[in-house]
Image (tube, rainbow, N blue to C red; front, side, top):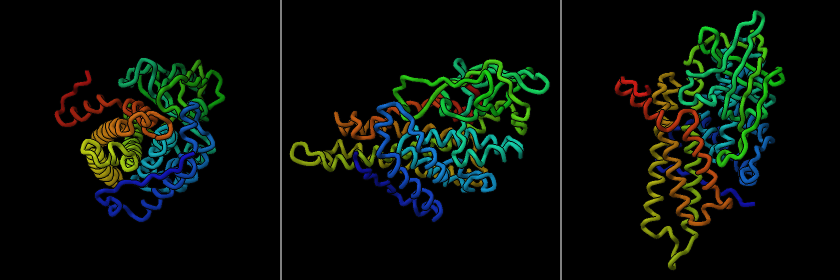
Length: 392
């Protein structure tokens, strides 16, 4: 079992812009990842198993709904603290960050923002403590980038709703206790519902044979005449804007998280380049290797500052969906390029589980697709700056 020697790069002293609370929160998450995630993550990935025992630890470091108010079990932290936690978790593994990100942004966030007080009191404390785990059902087999085309539907049966349909590529679904599900009513209006495990007709088959996010549990949500009590409807927002609001929060977390993956690849490549001797000297002394490392730290630094600024805007309530979209797209692309260059620097060793780079690279191939694909985010920016809709 290798020792986690990670040292976080901070080339432009970004730490000077963080509060003491920010650094304490980040360092607690970093220490936990080194202690609990790093020793087991390669084996979990090789076996394609989610290490469910980590759920309690994620709750202990405040990774579940860190910005949710204390009265509902959250830590009451700001958006930068949330981002820093996601950064450290994804430095460990994208799948671990996904578990926490889904719980926070896609389950707790909609219950807090769109739910009523009874729903908040019933679900949020248990979700924050890890006693309960949730998932988010928006994507369907035939509707990914076009979520408004969903066919999952509900019918008003008087004292309950009858839910039918299916969702695909759902993180946490195989073991989730609840699912935030988006479905169309008879008028074609999108509504959010809290569907609980054990409801008759509700099943969550697991997705197997993944080459990416192997240490994360992924599955489907299948609804066959599921009777959902009317009190499980999220009453305070509907329409496509409701789930997209959740995705804003999730994409923001991803923007921070992928910096962590990039940092880990860079740090691994830098350390390896100083130790690996070829032609009588460390490969760190060769121009082409220095070019790769210099470009890596430059791109990481640029991503750190755009994401920090986005966090400031989020705290002030001024961040736009388009800004979040740009940041997610930029940072995932940056992390993928760094992972690929770092893999090359390690040569054949880069594809082994002795180093984290290939695992990060495979994970990022999912991250570049989910919560809005690379190309869709490009079009979101295009729409924002031109006013012209190129989606249709």
